[in-house]
Image 1 (cartoon, helix red, strand yellow):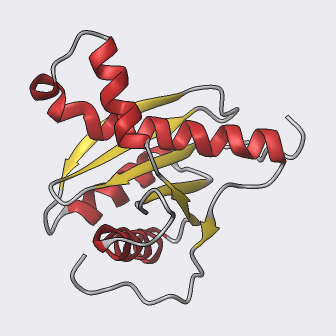
Image 2: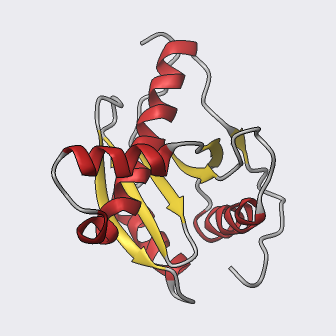
Amino acid sequence: MTGFRRGTRLGIDVGKARVGVSRCDPDGMLAVPVETVPRTEASLDRIAELVAEWMPLEIVVGLPVNMRGDETASTQDAREFAAGIAARTGVPVRLVDERLSTVSAHAALRSSGRSQKNSRSIVDQVAAVVLLQHAVDTEKSTGRPAGALIEPDEEPARDV
């Protein structure tokens, strides 16, 4: 575990309708689902409550890019949401490439016998778990945190 910073982390999978939230233990052994937050005006308030409850070292937010690594319409939305979290909580936020996290989440749920329809309420949490576990594993193997740190002076968008 060379270079791994000990501490709980939250994983956030930002979607247009729902926000999946996961967390890991302080040693980064296992990421687990926390909840699915409806994407409304109150989403950031609920995320801030979860941050106050779990007191994470940092928050990992999935950055949706296409398979070539190019930004998509959802990329800016995730950046703005992440900046809103950082501004609201004061906790460091890292943007981490989330390619295939939702695909992996659907595959995991299918292999556990759940239909896509029956999985809708938890797929965002599972995607957040996949994202967070990847970020933690990356830091453990490289000694460097995954993703890009959001600078504290970045202005969050008003319509998050």
